[in-house]
Amino acid sequence: MKQSFYFDTFDTPLGEFSIAVDSSGAIVATAFGDKTALSNRINAELIRDPARVAAAQTQIIDFLSGTRDKFDLTLAAQGTAFQHQVWAELCAIPLGETRTYGEIAARLNKPGAARAVGRANATNPICLIVPCHRVISGNGSLHGFAFGQAIKRDLLKREGVLI
Image (tube, rainbow, N blue to C red; front, side):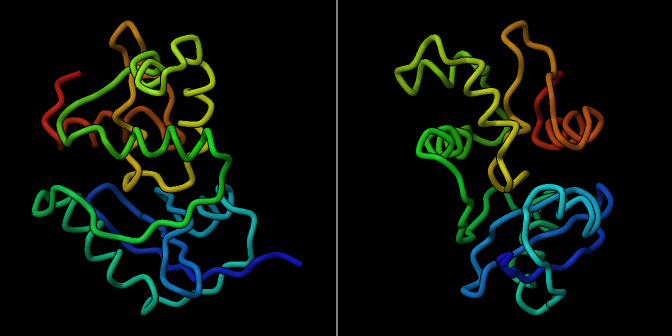
């Protein structure tokens, strides 16, 4: 039996955005796009319930509008211990800064694990809040983002990163 989560899709300055939460209100997944985009990130039954995601929605819109610089939300991403280590490092990247896959691997004391970091970054189910968009290639170029490089570039530009 599939798990059930609550979700809503709403408009932001970067287009539609969707959030899924568990019964306690903790965020389990986000996506730029509609319910289909969210379903591609989490294998669960999604029940529309705007009231359950309203607080997160407000923070997302405020962040993308430039009136908020960090999130105060409970997260409940499902993943391996290594993925959670990588995602914690992503959350430690300050607004307006980037890190490379290699830098994150080094911070985890796994200097040869840049590819594994890249894979964990790619499987991050909570985009934007867990800022996987702040990770770039070792050569300084944009590399990979589930929702396209145009959105990644826009997010970084909004945060003051010149790419």
